[in-house]
Image (cartoon, rainbow, N blue to C red; front, side, top):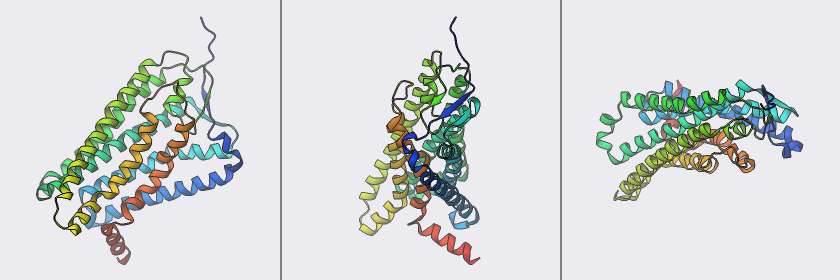
Length: 305
């Protein structure tokens, strides 16, 4: 028999070394969150109302924007609380729900980005067959498959987390309920949960990354064979935004979760994770629309109406 105390609440440390700037950081993150929700909502609305944006690329983009709204909403509100209070608590089940949605939406984003790279591959490498391959039915299946697979991968791990007893303290050295810091507080064997997390990581992330890389190898080789420089520039501009987003997202995630374990240090990961949970969702709408003539034309037409 061991003397175990059941934990029902966790304390999120947030960024204790930045306490002196907590008010400034609160205002900054709040503004970023409001802008992120507004920008991604704008993309969803403009794609919905504009006839000229009823294409597979913008269908996947609106899926990505919808995902980004909830991805940030799952994390940032509690993050803002860590700047306002000296002791930010979150109930055990609330913590696991937050962790579930964070990773469910994160995995889904990998898959949506992979579907978008496939769309760009067909558009550039097989333009004459684009309309017959990228049908509404196929786009819907790719989107539904991305959401469903993301849910299934994380749901199993979350169910196992619910069964773990927590008695090794209740302080999470993070601004949200990351799986790694949660596992450090468990007082029973976490090998199965860690194995499932590692299995999901090494199957979803590398496979989606590999498919994206292969797509872009074909895309770039096709673009280089275009005789005119104007044609090459036009072809590359159709996938430059997606390539930029993929680089930002995969770079940060591969750094943080390539070796998930309950016994690693999370100091640097905590800082890098801000890139994915705060910065990237803010930048994505800008990256996809700032040089996009179709979106600008659709917005101008909508305003005129």
